[in-house]
Length: 235
Length: 158
Image 1 (cartoon, each protein chain N blue to C red):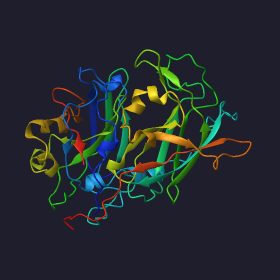
Image 2 (image 1 turned 90 degrees about the vertical axis):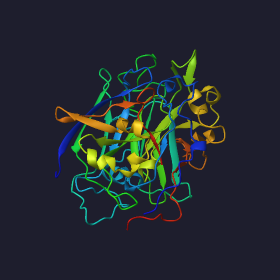
Image 3 (image 1 turned 30 degrees about the vertical axis):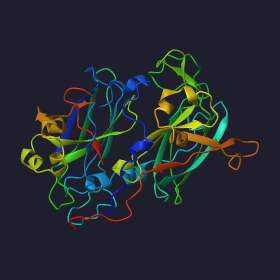
Image 4 (image 1 turned 90 degrees about the horizontal axis):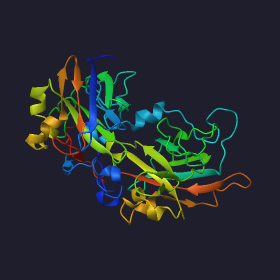
């Protein structure tokens, strides 16, 4: 049985980041209790989820209406690696996002009077290949206002959710776009430490851009890595 | 499906005691024989069961804050010292305002003897252990998760 490297706390946001208002009453006061890794921690739902998950990697048409979504079409590619640089193959990635106007398809979203696009749902899922690579097609999401502080706007972003190989590799994050002036003003982006927050920023990738079709962006993700030595077990 | 069919219900509360209406709760568990469906669990003495994955997701209800799962009570899985862990669900909690996943476990209130010797529970300060134990009443288990404040649920770092 091989365990995982300790969680890289210094690279992640704290539980409480006062500028992001919703963290204030939802962050524990106690420090997390340190436990050892047992079979429960080194297993996880990722493998099973990847087996049953359907692929759906084209958000420009997966509304199923027969008409394409409106907005700037983009190709997003990347690799899922672990902290040791090893690819994480066959893992399910779920993404969700606002439409090109910054509007989510969600029954609770009634604050922002931007148009809905009947041809855009904003949800996709797909697996990494044998080399950890993934690719999907979507519409570049728009920024949208939120109630965190006066004149607050979320920078354009795509939500990513991965289970990864074990319980502790669970990652829910957001992909931002290089050069967005709203990043400097966004408390969610800035809740991550200064040295690591650029890991959430996708880079324009001209080699991914397809002529007369769509611009390309590259976004890699890094999950927890295994310890190099097995730890002792009852076996 | 082999094993005891169970229902779990609960709410997630914030530091003001208000229920969280937008939480996502995930559970990961062994089957009734105590086997995880995962390549890191190759124990042949505990068999996998066709059709049982051991993973579930539930949202809290916007109007009541309630979440629920119907599942199989998990069997016992070994700890690294070769002893048996008490039956438990591994639980991950996320919501608006959670900047990282909150990892916890749910133990069963009717497994008192097993809980007393569980290696992970022993690592939790005694006064806080009760936050991880779901009481059984009316045929179902109640597991409330308190993100902050009095009786704050124990979250793990591993």
